[in-house]
Length: 169
Image 1 (cartoon, rainbow, N blue to C red):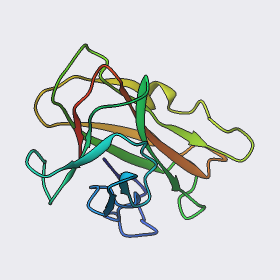
Image 2 (cartoon, rainbow, N blue to C red):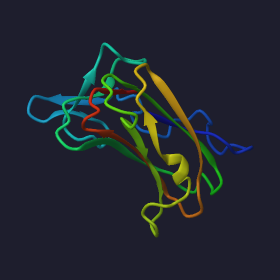
Image 3 (cartoon, rainbow, N blue to C red):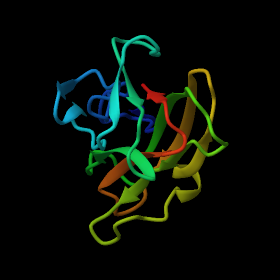
Image 4 (cartoon, rainbow, N blue to C red):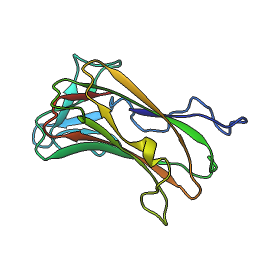
């Protein structure tokens, strides 16, 4: 999963800058009692490191043996006034479903956030969609526009319990 800057005719920062922290899940720690945790991501227990079937890099995040009806991975991306309202961003999600149980294995539940309105409606038709159940590494790309008043973007991917064995990169 990664989010990249896109837009402005006169960039105020490097247009190749990565806004997500640890976008490729390379920074993690493992504990025999608490399992694996990834730097700067909120990911419940039940996920592990995948080293054999990965898109690139050393590892992928592998959702397996989920213990709740739905699992997720989420990260808040602070988007300050360096990026004015109207700035476009491209959100890319790379994933592979190893064992599918239906068409809605993976769902984007991402949203813009502001201090006044927790979940803003802006880009909801783009950010809240079913990604599918592709059995090969697949990239989904979304072009989104920062709305007036937004201070962050919550990147959230939901994984259904019955749809186990997801690898994300």
